[in-house]
Length: 207
Image (cartoon, rainbow, N blue to C red):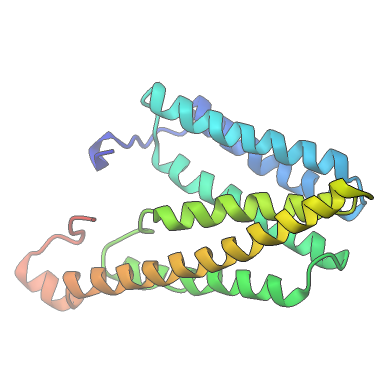
């Protein structure tokens, strides 16, 4: 979608749905920590449904906004983080998995000051990043479901860890691609002094 078509509006139905997802994050965390797994899975399913609906409505009603572009990935990352921490606390996943995933987000967060100095905000999410998020959002609920006794738990455990490993690999692959994009942006923008002296715009075209 062209940059000019992205609205700066705040009060839209898609944005309200995204905010509702964020409001449910602490509820979801409490449900996991108190072993209310069925209720936690229901909240997560409702969150996933609202994620699809708000994206659909934003496109259908031409209500794609800058706020929505920030809220959606923020909500996804918060659900992943909360699920990870809850499962690690309950010893369903090792803590090094938490460190591996969180370290990637901290690494990308550290690039924001660099992009700001180059006249940019956060770069668009790569499709590999979306695929990684999709895998992780399925992985950890399935690992949570593996607590169910019998064949259901066994199948959920196998699928959950398969999604977890694929998701983690894609997560880091997308992160490395993002770092390459940051380097390209900084090189294209040039030093701040050079941009000011030549009158170059603070933001170049994004790929």
